[in-house]
View (cartoon, rainbow, N blue to C red):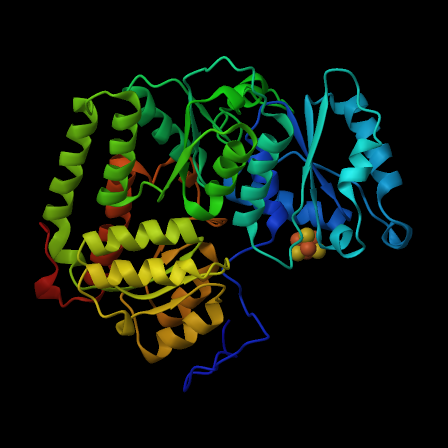
Length: 457
Ligand code: SF4
């Protein structure tokens, strides 16, 4: 599959990306929009764009991802999409009756300079319904920044302040699976905290099979809760890239202070999240959470011999990659390559800081933001690794180099059940540990001599 990858050198490239470790902004915007109940995500662009975005989400979650489009044609591309948007919004409210239409832009509508602010202001919106929007051209950012922009868009267009404090905590969960959101909610609820999670795709993209199709499944952040966020007491943004913009927008608009934390993956980052919840709620950490932490540490000690000093290549979305890298370091592994396709200069300094703290010379690890898998492959050929951790997009490299791959992150389009299973919190770390240890032990068993093939390990 990858015969074109040069095996004798690493080619430096500046102007060309090959196999980017990301996808386009609107994919994330649609995912965020699906996390609010009764919302129809709407793509202001050509039909091909939304077909791609829906296909990507459907393949990862194995659930239908509903969305509509302005269906640009050649004429629209020349004269602008205002008229198509007007017709689309009227039809969507008539046919599908959403509470909110959440519009995101595409490369095409941004390039021709469509002014969504003016277009939406001119729309005839039915009483009690809303139309919100955000800008997501795909020649910038990634699906993660698209998710972030749409999350912030909900606050910008919908959050209101009545002046009566609700005492609630806003949790921005980051670009994670519904299974992760359920785990985060379980932890927050253990403290008895009143909260609103935005967005919240539980019950939407992990809805149970009922035999009946629903355009708007039961889950998602209730709209009245999004509106009431202006009265919230505080926000916790989990993951700088995916979540901070939303919390920042709530502070800008309504003065609600926030803290940005890393995604709670592994021991230290989960500790940080738990302590933030303890501080906010003024409650001691519940025993059920302490117990999970102790179980995780126990499992890490038990399996340490199989993970210690293993060289690992980690790739994917920045918040997730930072979390996976932190956990690998906690398990005694050696990150040899750490790459995200999403731009953001801070990524490199955060990873280098983590490596230095773990006693690893940052020179011994290739770290790159806005990077691609082609270069990671070239570097793996020169300096082989024991394991890859990242989404399905690395599977051809894993096969070409005969390296085990642990699928973590987005998109995972060639496996099942993962959207339901958390990788955040102590329980999520236990699951990651199981996946990593199993991959390494299976490889060891495949390659060992008969006399070393043990029944008990
Ligand atoms: S044209 Fe742009 S927005 Fe549309 S699918 Fe391609 S990258 Fe995404």
